[in-house]
Amino acid sequence: MIVELAEAKKAKDIEILELKHLTIITDYFIICSGERVRTIVDYIEEELKKRGIRPASIEGYNFSKWVLMDYSDVIVHVFEEQTREYYQIENLWIDAPRIEFEKDQDILDR
Image 1 (tube, rainbow, N blue to C red):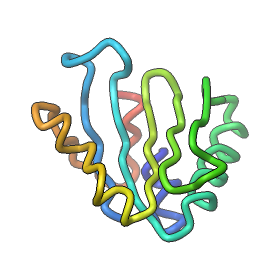
Image 2 (tube, helix red, strand yellow):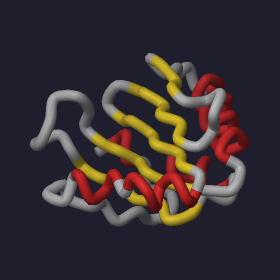
Image 3 (cartoon, rainbow, N blue to C red):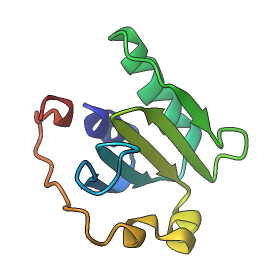
Image 4 (cartoon, rainbow, N blue to C red):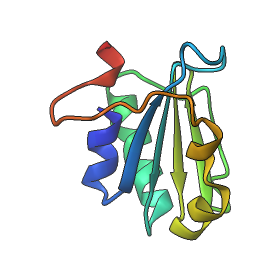
């Protein structure tokens, strides 16, 4: 659902990393980038709130270069494209399996 919401607001280069066997902090990272970081973040937050899902926290919103949305089991990273290129956080989790996403697949149900 989160990936579809991000795609709806023109998020690019979306990656889903499965971390549940690598760390206790979360089960999944969803990483994406886009030109309008706040638009992507606002839309994800609004749509999930409609379904009763609220983030534990949202970090980096004021600067909007890298926003982290903590939904406990899923952490969403929304990057400005240059910032994502600089940090390359997906490379820090090189051992994490990448999950192929198909339309109408909800990773929260996995």
